[in-house]
Length: 320
Image (tube, rainbow, N blue to C red):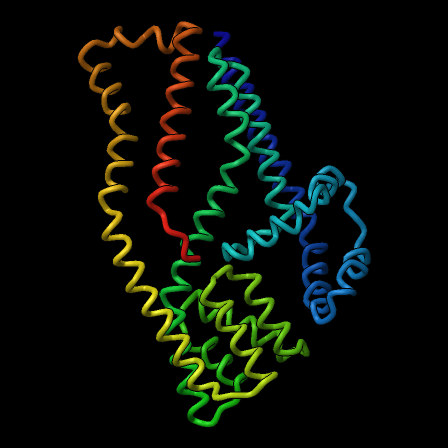
């Protein structure tokens, strides 16, 4: 009976928190829209950004969220991560989601007896949205890198046909697939609204953390200042990127054995625990019930994770 009451209490608490979060999010739609318009206008001059944001007063219901967002530049970091992941979510909504998950983790941990699981639950629940955004960021970056050489070829053809650089950027934004087309379209829209081409391209490098893109932007800015054949420059960049793809493929082939070893060594203890548990269910029970067993199990997990990361660092060659 007690367990049922606790389960009902937790369910009602989580549901109430979710409803409160939705109500707060809906109540701030107007403020977010106004802030979005102000940020879009103030992006023309970075010095006006802070003054523009102050035009909208903080919502009394979001005082805690606003204080957390301003701590150590957290809001700027979260907004950068959201932009790089291509997410339409705002930083304050992400912080509310993390706070809600943290509260749910604390409530669920109250009914658990294992201290290790409590720590993992309380610390891991708020990190779930960040991990999801990091995965989306990596996937989006890989898709951008894969399509970027074709976008450079498209720009080269447009410039050879007599179009200006900004028109070539517009063509890529309209014709290239996502995420290359989306990012170049944003760049052209910023330029079309009055931002100079240099700042538009630098904003593009902020949204997409790609070494290939930074190489392209640097080459374009140098060409505009010193002159030169832009067509030949873009062709050389496209050729360099494709040659790097070939080199990366060769590196992955050479390091395949090391990556396979890392996965085998990492999964072997888990497979062993599953097999032993199936053959003799009570054999490993002290690891989960005895405090000394919990400590040894925690040390084993930390050691396994450390070894896996170490192997990955050895075989991984940084090219971004």
